[in-house]
Structure formats: C-alpha cells, structure tokens
Amino acid sequence: MWLMTKFGFFSVVEKPGDKKIGAATIRARVRSDLEGLREYLPQMGEIQANVGTDYPFRARALKSELAVALSKIALDIDYNNFKDVVAKKQGKLRASCYGKVWGILYELEESE
Image 1 (cartoon, rainbow, N blue to C red):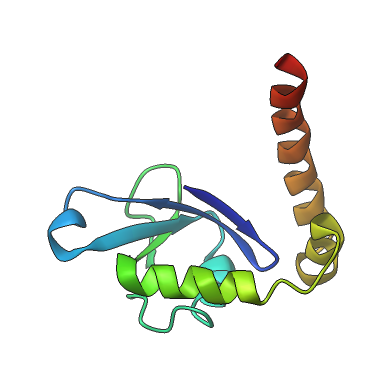
Image 2 (cartoon, rainbow, N blue to C red):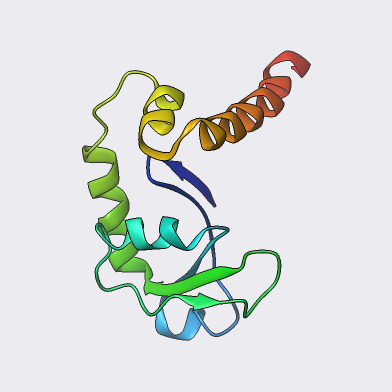
C-alpha cells in the first residue's frame, strides 16, 4: 500500500518475517517521514537505514497498531486541498512530487 499524508509518503508491505508476528514493514524515502508517523504510531519499531531495496528507511509495526494509527490519521484530516497542505507542511518540492503522481494517476481516469 502506498500512503501519502500531509506529513510523509510510505510504502507498507508484509516482508517474509512480518507474517508470523502480525507485523508490517513501513518504508520511506525520507527519515523524517517515519519520524512524523511515530506521532500516530508510537509503538513503531526502530527506524533502520540503508538495509533494503529502493527505500532507504524502514521500520516495523504490528498491523493492529498500524490500523489504529491509520484511523487517527484519517480523523486528523482538516484540509480541503491536499497538495496545498503538503506545500505548507513539507514544502513546495514535496507538493510538486505529489502533484506529478496525481498527474500520472489521472491517466487512469482518462483511459477508461
């Protein structure tokens, strides 16, 4: 699952060692994104750097705890334009990156 929030971008997956303990691996391109997620997910494990593939930062959390955190994130939505709030909180470069993703995904709408 890809998750874009006003405080970060995440790729959430189940790695081989995660399943037996009911965990998920939360990956990020920027350390501060995971640090921001800790506000919602204080039980998240230690942030590891440069231990995997194309995402340089990762941490693990129980899926049940992640589900609670995702609920809190949803309840904290307090804006009417996502790209604008990203620009305010994370800067124009990040908002531009998210806008490019939005533009690529717009192609799905037009192709159907």
